[in-house]
Length: 489
Image (cartoon, rainbow, N blue to C red; front, side, top):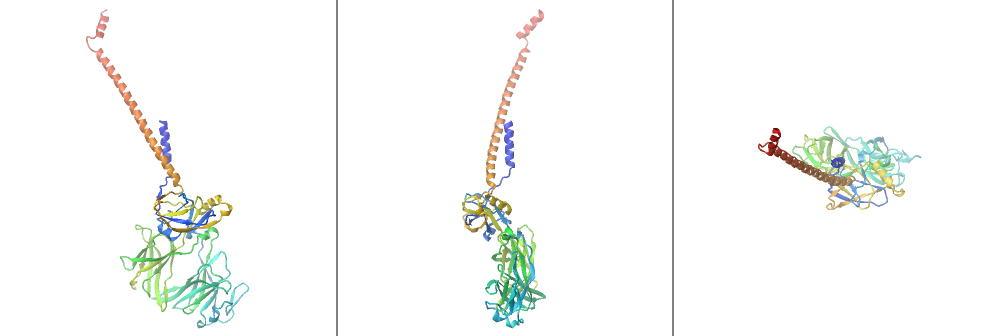
């Protein structure tokens, strides 16, 4: 019986070890990069978000040419070390029309030894200038000017403005554009005073007014502190999914739409179907059909038309939200939205995927499995693994790109990093269980056969004994005659 107990113990030990099922992945994409680095990083494109079946992108795997999974990390942009932006006032100088187009030093300002600007003449009137010159101050490596806030004094203003930046007041490049608005409507002031800047602007900025110069009370710049080291790479540029159409719900003013993937949405642009419309709105989201709706944002939506200028409400800012289902409730007490559809654009900052370049090319990225569990490791562990296996020439990170989707038919099931060992454990477990069942059956058969033999022998002995007793008890038998003769003698 001892071999049976040993075999049973082995089976229980194998069964207690973790077993990872082979998950089915719906999509796979080519990963392209130049060889020579220990690890590579790539922004997760929209196609990967659309194919993922998990809100945390836990069904992503990176495979080498042999189909083996390689270690990878996944860093969400909103998880990086960032501090809230701060506002700093900006010095600005109205420029005469004849001075705003030249490439030399603008008229009306002088340049100080430290690069600061100072006014050198009287401020021109509104009809005599169409450009304002801003001095953002000495640039710093640990901060970035992300936006300008222009506070307009006018009660009603609507106009376009373009932005140019320079480091030397001679060479200028585009840095953004916007439509500013300040209007009173039904006791409510609608205001759009923010100008998003493209990239990192130079020290000096020009604001060119296309629809008349407003009365400006003050100008602030929004400054973001940049994280040091690798976490700075997690701050990605905004990605957008345009053209989402919200369909009307069963109740008046109710609209529904789906983002189509677990995008970490932190911006929403809601477009009204009819011009000259103002409507308060509340936005909700939920993770599934059985989940309750939760409020994520509220704002006053507007679309105002003034001649050749049309102004719409700015994007809604909200904490990153991976819910797919969304609901917008419009306050229809002042009227409905009219004919047409409510359009939506969803914006997010893509996550950063990094993987170790182990194994042979080509590399593929697979995604799309509701049953898969996340196999991502921390970035620190990933870089430690990469540096331990890398030479001095390949220690730096490389940039990778995600190519087009590949045919998914040849790749039905893909193992994770731990599933190869799990498959072997399952084979050994099956073999051990079969051997244990066979041995148990043999032992049972042997014991039943022995029991039958012992039962037959005992039955024969009992029958013989019974027969002897019966023969000795019969009258007139030779034994009785012998016993009688002995008694007479």
